[in-house]
Image (cartoon, rainbow, N blue to C red):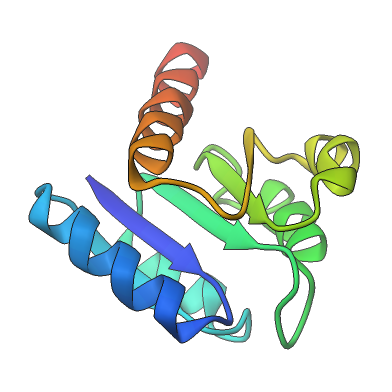
Length: 122
């Protein structure tokens, strides 16, 4: 599975990329939202994980942009340390919402859940 993970925390990206890659996934990472559409076009991810607080635009703004783009069918998982924005994230179009800190098992589970939602919607 191809995964695009967008988070301004380099440590989170490094660790999750290493673990998910060992599980057989292709993991692409960005630390800001500036090249998201270009990166999606280049990598064709099956799922996108996005942090809420990032340089450029928030995860909510990015999710809205993605859901109003040719990439709207790609599941978006919102990952944030602020559980209070869950309702707003869902309204923005997030398919799944998880809070930090999270375990890699939780991440694997929500990736699977999001891709199942995409398959049902196809």
